[in-house]
Amino acid sequence: MPQVIKCVNCGYVLYKGNDLVPPREVIKKFHGKCPKCASTLNQTPISIDVQASKGR
Image (cartoon, rainbow, N blue to C red; front, side, top):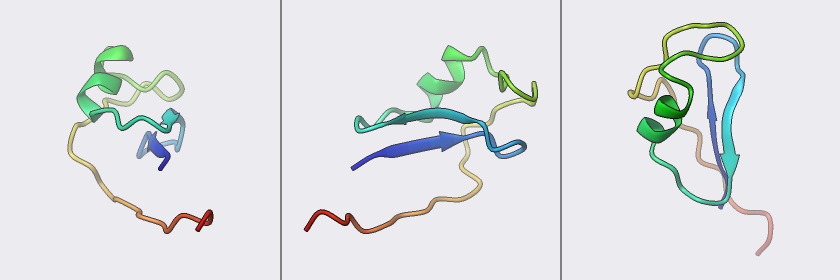
């Protein structure tokens, strides 16, 4: 089950992978700023999209 974390302002993919990673860790990795648009990253999700797996 892949997880994708994107910047809410520009859509830059901050994390994409099969391991579930807390948003706090991703924000810490980027020092609280989006590397593309420099907007402040927030731990509170703006939206969550859950999709069914196509494998089964």
